[in-house]
Length: 418
Ligand code: ADE
Image 1 (cartoon, protein in one colour):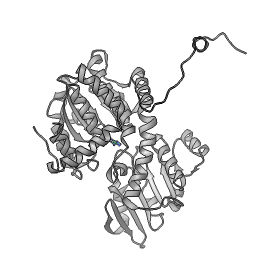
Image 2 (cartoon, protein in one colour):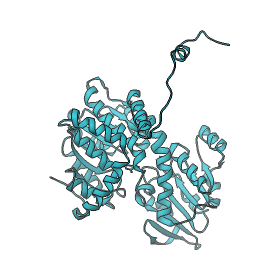
Image 3 (tube, protein in one colour):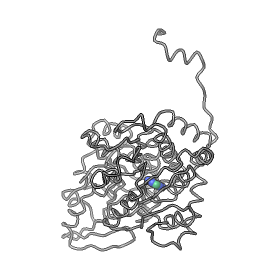
């Protein structure tokens, strides 16, 4: 067995934490049970590039139970839980290549190790597997049936590849399933981002001016939870519809140039680059805290912050203090990497339950349907999305109504009016 992890002795702790997560992932457990009987991924090689967390471990276990042969690497240098990586190797027999804090060279070395198995399916969170295959490993393409993509940023990259006719094989956009982004992006990011900020800083959220850049589902979740904890929330947007939505949701909307002067805590969730730049850092108050929950660490222009500073020191774990030339201090969280995974544990298991149920069922779908798929980005089929919603409701003991025949007829007709 091949692997590269921090320390195998951490496995015992990881195993217990994985058990805790599994207890909170009932939908994935049901899928695993069926997979154990049907073995729908028998001998399918999967390269997975995901945040190496307890929840990911539960997914890996379900895929292995389905018969898959898996190699896992991290989708971010700071998101690996080293005890989980150890337990995946020792207790679950999953070849894992990830170490929290790995540098860029090792990060890509680990991606290549995952690809070395010549996978049939790629499972991405941020599209680094697909883009590495496109750039350096095109020889792998003929064996690949398809891939899945977990996150908004990855789906955007893959759609751009499709537009340029560079997408090497079909992709299922797990992110776009309703049972993924309506819950994971909103409630998952909302809770775990606030959790990450608090664990890193131990700051009181109540009463502070909290600036959320980007009002997609992640931004909505963060704004909602920050407001719930008593912050005054300011939203920064470029999209008029989202800006209007934020306004009517009760937040103050303004350009970052203005918000920069007011905010106590700044959080980016746009998926774009250079959202907070030199001209914004230079207007911030002494003590401003700046973090990111978007997939890549490009949302904050960290080189610009460094250029403005005369001194930098790490004042707490995941908090770097930058002192500007006039003495003002700006605190950067988690080196600008996604703070919910850098200083906290990512989204809670019960929301990842639905996201990873989509991953598991999309992998099964690829194996069944790859002959009918083109080099395109596809939505998760609606029947899978609805099935996951029903299983989740069942697991929560929630029952819903059914249309009567009269209602079904009414909805499918156009003749009835006033
Ligand atoms: N992305 C956000 N939270 C996550 C988690 N807990 N596990 C895997 N990927 C995640």
